[in-house]
Amino acid sequence: MNGAVPEPLPDWLSSARRICVLSGAGISTDSGIPDYRGPDGVWTRNPDAEKLVTISYYLADPEIRRRSWLMRQDLLVADPRPNAGHAALVDLERQGRLQVLVTQNIDGLHQAAGSSPDRVLEIHGTVDAVVCTSCGDRTPMRAALDRVAAGEPDPACLNCGGILKSATVYFGEVLDERVVEAAATAAADCDLFMAVGTSLQVWPAAGLADLAVRAGARLVVVNAEPTPYDDIADLVVREPIGTALRRLVAAPG
Image 1: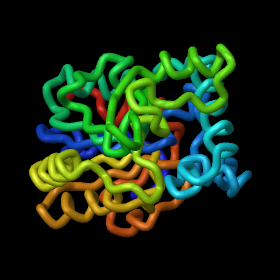
Image 2: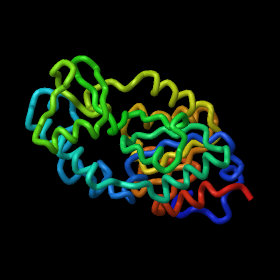
Image 3: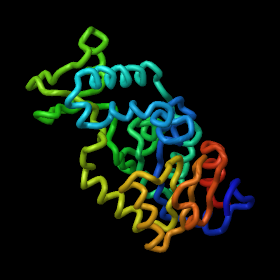
Image 4: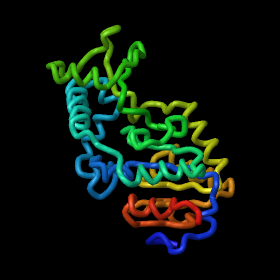
């Protein structure tokens, strides 16, 4: 089924009790954070911007780091807030049906909306902290951005002088194995897997849908653009995410 949320909801959707959600950039666009690979995405409009989050370029080029810090500063100033899509997933958790929320996003908006931190797996890290690429020291992002605002275009680690970066997984870096394993376990143990606002093109996150389907779970895809998994999904929804999720996660009865 492809298009709008069906009325009434399928029995298997409203009766699901062990739901795993994978969220991508599309759930945060209504909060003013652009996606990356959509028709008007950051990297679609400016492929060179991908260098700002590619570890080899970042470590080698001070100008790339300067631009990256300015990008982080702009995000802080914008002060994005959770939207209806984030709120719908909080409701799903309160119903006792959301087991795990795996997110490819680094913006922290799920937790800001009220999702329990112990149910959120940030597979690509978080923008709320910075780490030293030399000694591993971890400090708040805001402290680093305060230094940028005070005139340091490329703040160095105060502990060892090494290069600082956001605590996100850049292209060319390895994901946290413990987070990936926890996400895989959740996908294999759910009765419904919902992919929300994600292109399902980035691995290993996209592979979670395969794990869920092979384990017998239903698959729902909520995304503005087609994904490689639409053909095997039990339901594909093209409606705006905030509108769609409110109806998809409605409490049974």
